[in-house]
Amino acid sequence: MTATAQNGLKDKLLTFRHGVHPEEFKELSNHQPIERMPFVEDYTLPLLQHIGAPSKPLVRKGQRVKRGDMIAEPGSFVSVALHAPVDGTVTDVGLYGHPNGQMLPAIRIKADPFSTQQLDQPALRQPEELSKAEFIEAIQQAGIVGLGGAAFPAHVKFNISEDKPCRYLMLNGCECEPFLTCDHRVMVEYAEELIDGACILQRFIQAEKVYIAIEANKPDAVVALREAATKAGFPVEVVPLKVKYPQGAEKMMISAILGEEVPAGKLPIDVGVLVSNVGTIVAMSQYFRQSQPLIERVITVTGTAVRRPANVLVPLGTPMRDLVEFCGGVTGEATRILLGGPMMGIVQKSLDTPVVKGTSGILVLTEREVQDIDTFSCIRCGRCLEACPLFLNPARLGLLARKGLWDDMEDYNALDCFECGSCSYVCPSGIPLVQSIKVGKAMIRERKSK
Image 1 (spheres, one colour):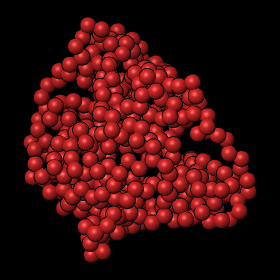
Image 2 (spheres, one colour; image 1 turned 90 degrees about the vertical axis):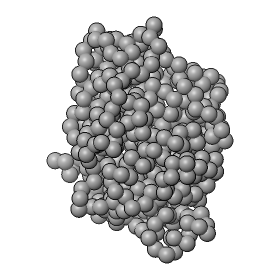
Image 3 (cartoon, rainbow, N blue to C red; image 1 turned 180 degrees about the vertical axis):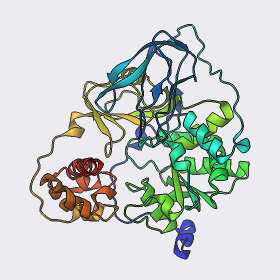
Image 4 (cartoon, one colour; image 1 turned 120 degrees about the horizontal axis):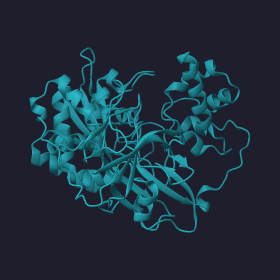
């Protein structure tokens, strides 16, 4: 780390260059303690809940399952197991609606109304007893994926090759997306589990130093984690960062804390850094210490059209409609539903889809907040260039995408774009730049796969 970066950790809030400052709306739910969602009657578990190959079902219709039982095994190395969120009976293995808008294979479970739904899984070997290979396999069998939204299988990220040593482990608690507060509450209420998980992971990847990055608008999380780290005697540095979007992107965190740039086309581990979401690390601790695989997660249900914004611990497979009803339902002004936040969230056509591992939030907005914007010609103002955290040229990439010039898009590093939406946010002409770039990236990847 450079001397400048070291001094900055003490003297000022660190950040990256460019980015935007959307209104936060965190106050709707950031002080709401995590509540447990009551168990409902039916659960739908899509076999595809992560990047990579879908899980392979291990159960059949009519089979009884217990909470925590493995009901689907990994479909390949880049895949994870899936577990029953409740005691109950498998009622179907078939096609059901997925939050991505498709009909995909899923396991349907009817909960046992007479069960206490207490987790009763055999004790696991403690992580200190495992070899690196056993540790990686355990994370895969636990079904753990990145809980920041991308849902990338955690064991793949943690399986670091010997020729790429990890210098730094960074835990991402920035949660820069407006409205969302689930990571914030996890850091406050599960601080000891987070520090424990960081200790477990640091042992296996042999990182020299551990950072926890948190935007400065979460001072209670900073205090909670510093106290937990001191209590555990674990040398972790909790780093408050400037409130700016997209501060929580991996490359932006590395730039802010270390003053280093991840080269185009490379990953954080190529510069000796492993980044993981704080919720992922808590899930890992709960698996090893409590024998609980990833069967539930914390979700923020929020928005000006939600009657009672809340942070809720929800069993996977819970119908989103039931979750929203638990939070008081929506007002008559509700117009649009997003999974995630307003910058990178995915619009839903209905609430008749289940909670999956990558569901970090349900955002319900009013008509006033989602007004259609007229689109005009680019005026070459350069605002998208000033906003892009990766120093790309979104206006050019959008134009190339609309003209179908995929090779030219690749030459201009379109694949480096992580679709944060900053360019669309600042465009005075209302051009949907990030949407055009998404289409272009998909076409580039499709051509490469042939």
